[in-house]
Image 1 (tube, rainbow, N blue to C red):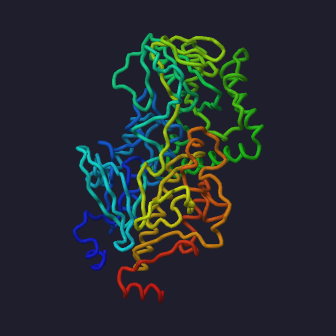
Image 2: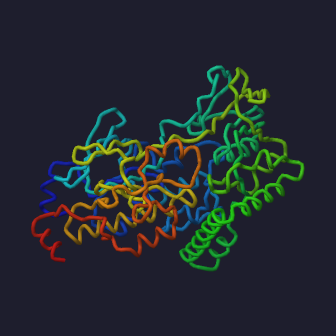
Image 3: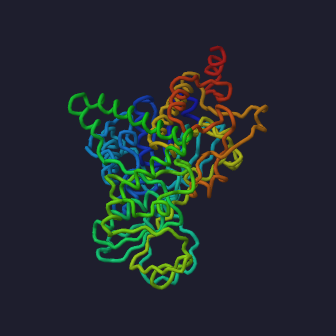
Length: 508
């Protein structure tokens, strides 16, 4: 930092970079900073007491990834476990290992919940207000803000407004708030939902002695795959670890994209293939049309992965069953369905989804003006129009989250280094006047999952042309971040550190 910058921030609790969130994305961003911007100071603000984010928060039975760990893992740290579809504790261990390998833990401020972030052009920094565990508040300032806090509320989950829910006399649980001790052996359990959480809970609870019924309003596409990658494990025996990891990662990225592209170009063929696989799993007498045939095309919503056919095995053994019907109401003993059928349960689990938050629920302002994110346009899916020095990590809905998180962190580092080269303190994407009436579409488009559709009106928009797009395409993003110039006529670098630096930048 220059002498002028130091003087302008004198007396502040100041870091060059503030990272919000100590989960998979935040720890990854910290490592990229250490590697690519070694002269920058940074701190991580984490609202909870532990590293790991999602993978520390969720404790329900069977919690696991729904992506392979060779792409959900970092690009700089090989996944070393034999299982590529990993359980939650293994993923949390991986994130904690990364934290300690790069000496990041001392830079994390736990129980620092971010409430407000105000950008000051005069100071060229964000002033971030945080609330501590004792209810007190403090302000931490930094030149660059990296929002890595995920996309859903840790304090609230989504539960539909079920009629009569207060009438139920049994135990009602949402997976996000799973009790430390729950005895469900030999108990009747209803799991409401048809997403990844429900698909994980049902076979796990059934295996441990519960009589489980999954009640879904409508089916989801479900595909079985081994929880180990034979090619990855074989490569690790004959190649250096980093080579084996890179090859496996490349293979899986290409496979993910191939499958997704097929769902866009030949949805009926993919649908037929998926349903054929389910019928092979469950046999000719099972009603696959009713329970496993969605009304939408594959990848219009996220597909569910079940490792080693565990869900199908539970159904075939009789320890789990699927009921596809709308819920009329809760009763004292369980549920009454729209067709009049009544289901009794000792425990009901509402695996009904997450409550999404825009920017972790933080209130933003720029030079005293409150930011209303639906009025902004997404810039390359990582920044937002007229908001300086803020980069937001939001992963892919059609591939592994960390693929995008790694690229986003790389981009943030490039911005920081370029500002130093230009002796500038600020970078901002400015929407050209000629594009002010550009047609817009939702920030996540072509994806009809309910948990997204409920809140897309609160998120930034995307435009019809680059760079105002959120591609959700790893190959395109990789080219954009690693190959394209930062100065594209839209991204502006300004707010010089001092007059001499400004003159030098103008002459360069």
